[in-house]
Image (cartoon, rainbow, N blue to C red):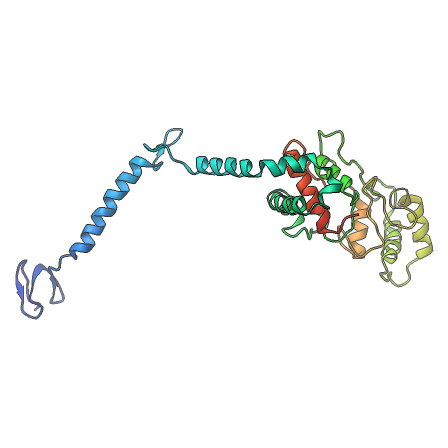
Length: 294
């Protein structure tokens, strides 16, 4: 039968008293927490109460308690951004006043424009074009020196400012590829034939038995008004150069057939009005130097 223990009994083995609790004959010793630990714990409680009073802490109607100090992270960021804008103001004014063509020939301005442009690109453009401008399916690779709407400084500036197929901007790039399949302009066999021919424009081998002569004629009749008879594209309407190995929607025959079938085109936001003039010019320079623009 297990021995009963009572609170305050002396334990000879440890020299401590017991609490009166025991399990399977093992008595619980009355061992208080170290004083330093208790003081630290009490201090944390006091600090928490002080923090709740001084800083925003508790959810409340319409937000949270404001705290006696009135501090919040948003106000800190606002002050830091204002300081950054003030620090950059002189260079931004110089950037706005300098013609695009002269920025890249001025080392100080070029360095500043690339730094500001890289930051703006990361915040606004990288979700579609990738962190390094490498693009992805349906979003142009900005490093490849292949430009749907032109690669000169002025053309890039216009594209960034007004976007592509952006509703509400009368100056946006508006070219759209017809839906040759959906609209019944070409049947399935004709789409397959013209896709075989398009693949040869960039040096790819067509399927065995492909009728390239017919494919070329279909291309001339239906595609050349935008892409040109040589397939080198037209930046006026955003028609891609089909003679390179840079593909917006993929290089396979199935990819090409799908584009001919559904047509259309991607949408790019118009950044004018969302970004200031200096930032747009910095973005223009940054993108231009990414791909070795025209």
